[in-house]
Each structure stands twice: as C-alpha cells, then as structure tokens.
Length: 464
Image 1 (cartoon, rainbow, N blue to C red):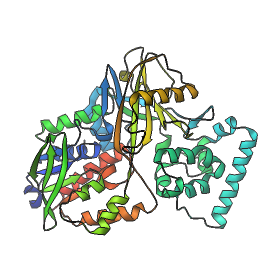
Image 2 (tube, rainbow, N blue to C red):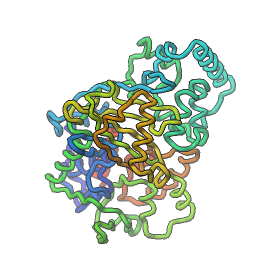
Image 3 (cartoon, rainbow, N blue to C red):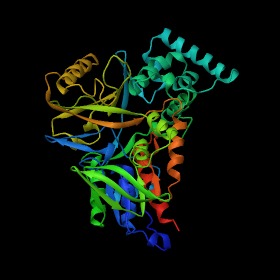
Image 4 (cartoon, rainbow, N blue to C red):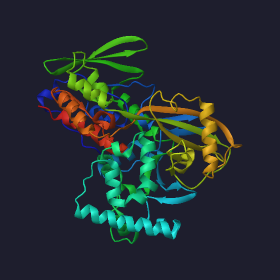
C-alpha cells in the first residue's frame, strides 16, 4: 500500500482546500493520494467524465478506449495500490504488436531476424551496408543528433529509416522528421541500434525494456474502469469532482495562487484554494493567468503545439480480426497510424462472437481529417483496411468517432527553450505544481503520469 503521511507540518495543517486541474491519470492520482491523507480536494475536469486520455466509451455492448493503454510499472507500491483498488477486475494480458509494411507483417519491436527473413536479399545487403557506413560516420565524424531524422539515420542507416521510421513519424506528427527534436526518438525508441536488436535477439542482454514487455495489467471493462474506480474512492473519502468545467483564470496575489475561476454550463464560478496541482496543457495553464503576460511568454505559449488524434471505432460481426493487440501502419498512403483490436486486451471489450477495431488517425484540430464526416472517414478507412488485407466491408455492425485535441506534445526543434520559459514562469508561484503529460509537455506513459501525480501530492504534504 502507498504510505500515508502523518499530517504534522504546520503549513499543511493550514491547507483547507487543494484544487487539482484535470481529471486524467495524473490529476486523479494526485487527488487520490491527497484524499487518502484526509485533505480537502476538488478536481476540476473539462469533460463529462474522468479519465483524460484514458477514457473508455461504451456503445452497444462494446468498449473502446481513447487509443491503446496498458498498465505496466516498476513501482511495486503503485502496482499493489492499483491491484487492491481493482481486485478481481484487473486482468493480466499479453501484448502482440506488428508493423504492416509493403504487404508484409514485421514484428514490433523490430527483430533483426524478422527483417532479414522478410526483406529480399538485395534490400538486406543494402540496409546492412548503409547501417555499417552510418555507424562509422557517427564515430569518425561525431555526427550530432539534432533532429529525429539525424538520430534514426545515425543509428539505423537511411534504408531502414525510410522504411520504418521516417514515413510513420511524419504521419504521426504532420511535420517533417527534420523538424522534430531528437528528444522524441531518445524517449520513444528503446532500441538504440542494431547491436541492441541483436543482443535481445540472441538473449545476450537480460534487462527487459518497456518496449519489449509483453505482459501487462488491464481492467476487465477498459482502461477507463481504473480511473472510474479511483474517482469513486476520491468521492467516498470526501473529495469533490466538478465535471464539464473549463478553467478561465488562475487568480493570484504576491506570487501565490488564491483561487481558480471556471465556467460550467454557462456560469462562471470561483473556488478559493491553498494550493493547486495542474495537469492541464502547459500553454493553457499559463494563458489562464489574467495579468498581461510578457511578449516572450506569449511567444513560447504559441510555439508549443499538440498533435490531435481522431479515432474511428468500428463494431464488427466477426469473432476475431487477428491475434495482434496493435498493428502499426507505416506507409503514408494509409489514413491510420495504428489499428487495434480491443478484444485482445480484454475479452469483455466486445460481446461474445463479435469484435471491434479502433483506427487511430493523427490530425490537427479543425483540419480536413478532424472535420471529415464520419461516413466519409469510414469509407476511406474501409478501403485502406481492405488494401492492408483486412476486409470487413460487409461485417460492420455500426461505428462512431471520438477525438482528442491534446494527444501528443509536438517535439519540434527548439521546443525545449519554450517549454523552459513557461516552466520558469510558473515556478515563481510557490503553491502551484504542474505535472502530467500535458502539464509538463512531455510524452510519458500512463504509469509515469500516475507517479507524477502522487509525487506532486506528497510534495505538497512536505511543505513546511
């Protein structure tokens, strides 16, 4: 169980109300920790339900997450807390992921043996030769990793980059990999080079990277069930959760936040507070300060962008599509970046004898994909699926779309400068903590977001 701190600090005892902005994994975890310690907590969430990027939508007996999620953590304390909270509702599942590319199916994470067996001899020779040249140039000329393209080419060579990394990355972000910081590759791609691939292939490296982990925890009724349960516990302990509420202003005095103003159902309301934990998007948080912001701060607010995602959720009159949890679609001629079958995570995600698919389509808010009518999107995606070898045209029971605006923080070149500017601005406020994926403008997994929230709560409880 998570350690409950004894409230002995004078500063802590004076806290009457802590406000948490955002009811996603990070915000709810913070509120959960604070509630268990007996503090008065109020969560303000803009959507009609909690969960953030980990919401599960139910429709006609089918369950669809916002994207694909799984619970993996090396934090035993966190795992035991979640297992206690979920009880028999927490399943242990196995992941199997593949990359669909040029009429072939490759293992994901990439396997040297798989690539060698499935590519033609000429392509293998060219890929290996280019990889060796890239490795030598990296050492001899000390090539710098400025962009994502630099990072991937320097480690994999340009042949494999053009096959597996470049097109997918450009589809995901909507900008050239030359304009994406190498930080994204460093954080996201666990296999640093072909040497790493070979070490894992021949079992010469024992540590299991997250990318290689196959076993994971997953709630019976979708990932959202975990955060529904957490919100119920918060409410039982006296916490409050305000839904459909958009933050309007962070009201402060002498570099201390005194209250939060928000709008709910057309009415503006204000809550006084002693401290704030924010998980809302970093630029939005800074813009919420009503005083006129300096020009350089406004420039940094404008410079940080998020990539949106539209999900096409399809109910299918078939028992199964494949045994894959995730199917990555690299080629840019196809609309979707990933295909997933929710039933692979939990058999309770679809009625018996039926299955479903979630197609993840990267986009920008209010672009052509974002505004595309669902009928047109279905028609386009069914044609893509058929070309990929998944013909479900006459098996569609129903379908609907969901979307998220702040799906991925865009690691464009120079993003770290602007991010640091905003964090420095917020650090001046002694009773405000920003955390989480959106709050720190950092691509992190669900368990890391939860740990961040708990750490933020504990940080407040240590304030003297």
